[in-house]
Image 1 (cartoon, rainbow, N blue to C red):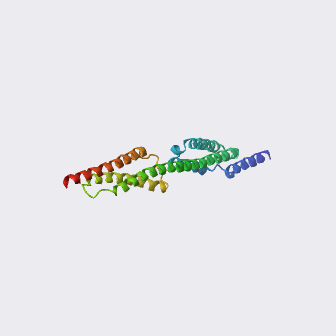
Image 2: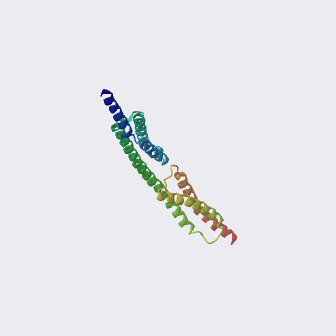
Image 3: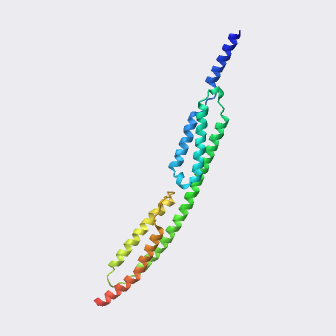
Length: 202
């Protein structure tokens, strides 16, 4: 009888070990993939503190996965694991939000810088329309070409930002503004040269 009881207990333990809720190992792959997606989105650069916290939480959850996976199913305790996974996912969600806010703020800064340059370009092109009829306008072609090149650069950047493609590195806006100013300052000088040249030829 005693042997029978022992046998039944052993069988019961075996059945429990087989059919007991096992650790969902695919869940470990899931949070690892989510963290990798965050990393690929540039979270380390856009929201370094939030990403670091999420990374630590994921590492803790993965360690708990490993701990529970090493145990016999009947002795596993999934409460802490569920808490760790939930905490990791919550921090990753916060990181996504932090990245989004950081990109929105940077996009606003870039568009503001572009607007300043575009304003300067607009004034310069308006000045070029006032070019005198007499004299050689070849120097003005060079100035116009340089201004158009700057315009294409900031125009392409504006299009990317407005599509949600916020670059981590941007052109030297201050340098571009200074270049536009210098080119604009040359326009009246070239006008005077054109008039003087026309006067000499007449």
